[in-house]
Length: 169
Image (cartoon, rainbow, N blue to C red; front, side, top):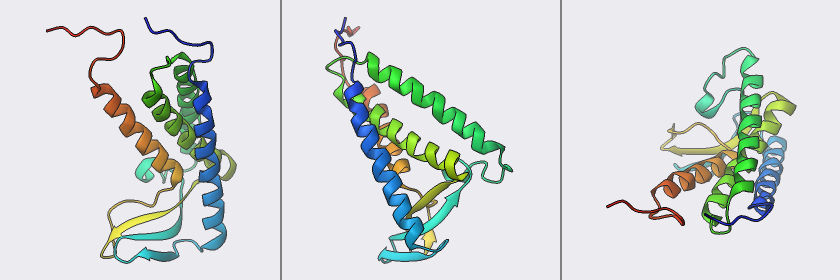
């Protein structure tokens, strides 16, 4: 059995806090610098800054829900955040990859949760496109942290032989 310390990997909450701070500072910057849907081209035909609000979830899911979705997504984010903190606490010393993944997802979830509760919408400002066609909705730093963390979680499932596990041939 893996030996865990009293606080598990809760030290990685510092990464979650860093993600939250970078997310909120960047959102404040772009909200103060851009008009709604104004684009500043960074790399022509590929990448722009733009300001957009999302009242829904990923890919604007339920954005036209009439307002109830704000609280549904807030409750989901709170529950997921609590689960992630408990999971971090239960991790062992050798679970650094997993701790980083969970901390990234947690920081991103908290960044978007703050927007949802305080503003009623999530602020997005990153737009990836090709030849003026938008292949992805606008997103933000929190979304990026959640995505990277989720990919890391998926990769963790495929890691070979974790400590304490046996391989059946």
